[in-house]
Image (cartoon, rainbow, N blue to C red):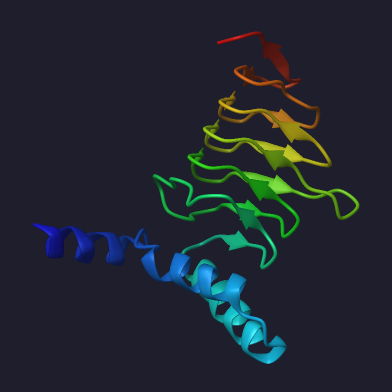
Length: 153
């Protein structure tokens, strides 16, 4: 059953095992030329899966991507906490070379846009299609446009 699942995931572009391996190697690389080659391979792998992850993005743990990297854009200045769920077509973008810092255990719904030098707290749920450009405290839910913060979900 494991081989069958791997083949299905690979054919759909959801098998990100090699992408995360390249990501870890790229972070450990000290040599500029070797690091550049790994960055190129990582970017090509992300592009193959339909997304973009900046080479300097910091992941504190491997996020769960239920739909693979399909349509996901993550700025190179972003910091993503442990145990985050990121759905398809999410943009985590920068403004003036400053990107969001996302806490641990967050859920980011499909099509959400998170922009600028903001902090998203731990265990925050960001609804599908929400555009977030302000800080969000821990344990809140963010929905709609303009953003409404619903306290302590």
